[in-house]
Length: 257
Image: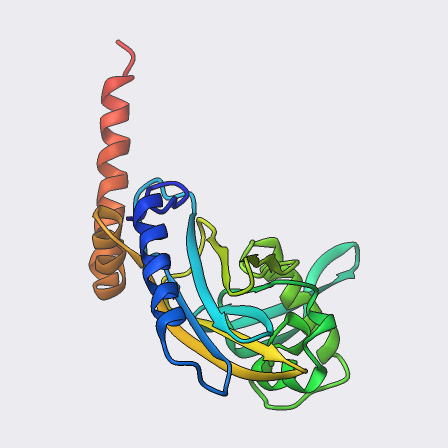
């Protein structure tokens, strides 16, 4: 169940589900390769009127030693970064760079500092951490200004709370069980997200699980959103009519005798 404010999973259901998953793991025959089992308390974040954000519980268990890291990515989008310059005392846009296939949301969690167990080769291959996030420009090249614009894009996304500034802490409950909360802000983009959980040992990924999560508008706001995108012309005309009627009604109510 997703609340209109921050999501708080039902304690009994969440703990019972985690217990069943972990019990199945412990009762399973032992194998040579480490095993990772992970799931979410809910696979749907419902955005309703008055939505202020949601927390989703991610829990799981491991068979064997290792560190756990989680990467949450939102649907891809195109982002334009502009740089302003002062000309004749006026700040105007002088240069811009267009980035394609940019994750509209990016969050990372780990049980300890990632630089202690995620080598550069692994981080780059799986894009674990903002420093390893692959960002491509529309022209496909990397100019001398690319690092500056890339850093600006990440700062802008962090300012909007869509990219995490620091990895969220993953808590281990004993030697095998772990959990963490994934926070989705009020402005989280709608669409299908991917939640990737990695188990690393000796500097390599030994097991991984990827599960989808959907952020969707529901209720009246969803119907308005859908109508505006499907029938943009009609929505614009209707908005103008509502504004005219509202203005006329206000003039009648406050008309001076």
